[in-house]
Length: 102
Image 1 (tube, rainbow, N blue to C red):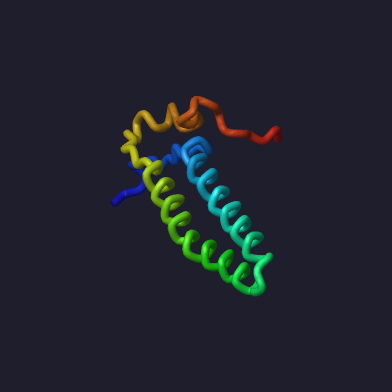
Image 2 (image 1 turned 90 degrees about the vertical axis):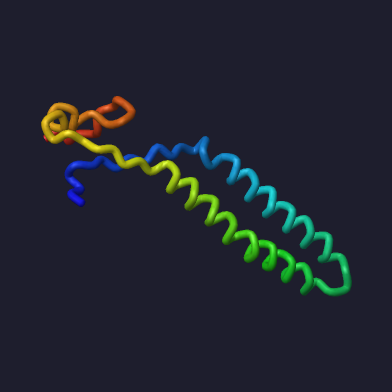
């Protein structure tokens, strides 16, 4: 496969993962709330174990959600080498990349 004939673009934005971030924050706050509730009991070790268990069990699901969302937003598009020379400086969003002043 000749990579010069394809353009790789990532269309991921913060709005695409916003829901995942909110769910992760809810999980963290619920685990902290349960830890505080268990701190008042006679065995505070259960509080630490509960927080650790919730975070360890939820982390793979969070990473899976982030990675699959990222992979769903990577696009391969074929590029004609003849037209690539004229549109090479313009990015997908229509803005030009930063250039040095020298």
